[in-house]
Image (tube, rainbow, N blue to C red; front, top):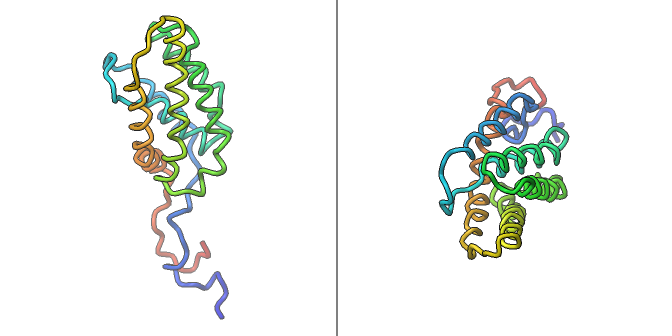
Length: 180
C-alpha cells in the first residue's frame, strides 16, 4: 500500500486549496459593491442588493475581517445615500451579518447551491427588516414583491462565490514532487 504522499497527482483534491485572501481585495470588493448599489435604479423590483451579497460572503469566508461593525457602517452609508431613515439599512445589514456569522462554519461544508439555500433566509430576514420598519412608520405595505430580491440574491450566491474567490484559487501545478 502506498503512502498518502506518493499518491498520483490526480487523486489529491487541489481545487479545494485556496490562497489566503488579500485584505485590500476584500475592501475593494465591498467598495465596488457599495458603488453598484448607488446606481440610480430607483424602486425597480428584482434588483438584488450587491452590497448585501458581498457582506454576507465575506462575513462567512473571512469572519475576522468583515463583521457587524463593517455592516453597520455600510448600512449607515446606504441610509445617507438613499435619504432613508437613519439606521434602517444599518440594522438590516447588521442583523444579516450576525445571522451569517452564526452559520459561517457550517456553510463551508456545502456546495455553492446548498449554501445559496442556506443564505436565502438571511437575505429574506434582511429585506423583511427594512420593509417592516417602513411599513410600521409609514403605514404602508409594498406587497410581497420585495421578497423576489431575496430569491435573486440567493440565486446569485454561487456566481458571487466564484467571482470573489477567483484570486484565491491556486493554479494547477504539475510538480509531482510536492506533497500538496
